[in-house]
Length: 309
Image (cartoon, rainbow, N blue to C red; front, side):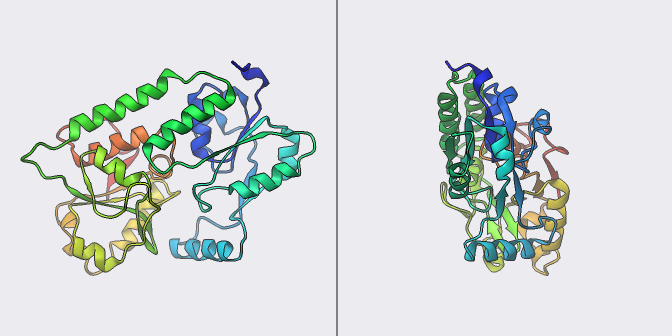
């Protein structure tokens, strides 16, 4: 086992920061990304990245800015190389799952190549499914030279219990669920989201487990007419999600949707839960279960992680 005192970890993605905390290595975290905000005690660590776009803009403008940067082979995020040099990390955690979500692996590799006083090990995560997230936790633990925590099996057990509680019997039909990951342009939840919906006893309307978030035509959503609509825009908290959902709800066909008529339209804190492929995906399954099967499970997330629109 490696002495944690010798570790100097920089995490450049929020989910990896949460994995570091799960492994009991919070004290070894010397730097983070500008988006890392959990657990709260890590917020005093210096931010080693900054965004090249303004996330307070409307969704359509954010999408346009992201598209422009990617088409021009520019990174959406910038690494503070001087700060990284000063921190002298032994390990840098990043990802190569999504160039929109966090600093890209290639940018991290370029930055590390320029460091003079440190030669950190780069650990890149690329989760597409829930099992990939569990594997990432194990891989990070092994790379850091620490044991795999019992908290990992606890997370897996929570998901299993939730699945057992919410699976419909032969007489019960799974509610069809549309998870909205972006509102303009309209996109459905991808990667692990369809899987989480199934684990929580729902039937994902759009999206293939393990595949990126697909674009969704408004007419297709109207035609499919889901039983439940859940908003979880990438990077947005409850308040911002309510703003985005309210704009979409102004469309004339909105009131005719089954989910709207039955009062089953929900907003969630996607930034804290669904968008982060880390330990709190277990919470995300429980949140979905609480939304889809309130008669069966009550975890106490309402008002904190989700609300009715």
